[in-house]
Length: 260
Image (cartoon, rainbow, N blue to C red; front, side, top):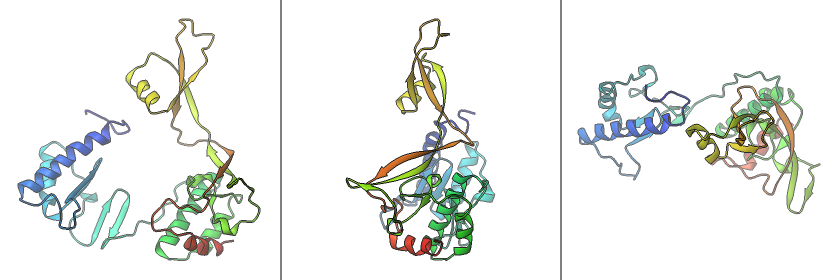
């Protein structure tokens, strides 16, 4: 076991190894590495591999020869269904549903569920006003711009809002933000701490009284499975800008107006 899951080194390493397996498999079968439309004949992201169907068996055989175990229950080469990187595709159309696995009594989870279901409704043109209204009423109304995280509040079109403070080209709002948790670490600069500093996940902190050796310390952010939240006052110059391609403010307005 060279690298465990959760280690930031694992995904890049998997990508390099599996991409070479896919490339070698295609070349050994005399298949082109590029398609006529200019797209590659294979794509790899971590442990997720997409390859020309004609090379499917060769890729599986080579992976097993290299000591890997192919999950046949999640590998698809027959029929119209495919799965990749969190998407379920039937005849090329993404049919992945919205999974609600967290307690909706927590406001952040309610906001996330509402925003994800609205996106689903907009993307597929399927109206689900009763479900959306039920989830909408499970948390206080908190309108936020579309480029905020799903847990920040309700993604809401600017045109449906009245009492929004506006000054100097900015709209002001209050968003729900996760409270960051930190751990103090003596700055001996091991590799992991150095990467945290370079990545911007560490901040300097004052020396403490029990730091008798006089070493400086840093605070490193810690991932939380169930974070606490606070309300943050923020502003934006582009409330209705939608970062996800293919979704328009007109479609969003139609969907959420059925709820409000």
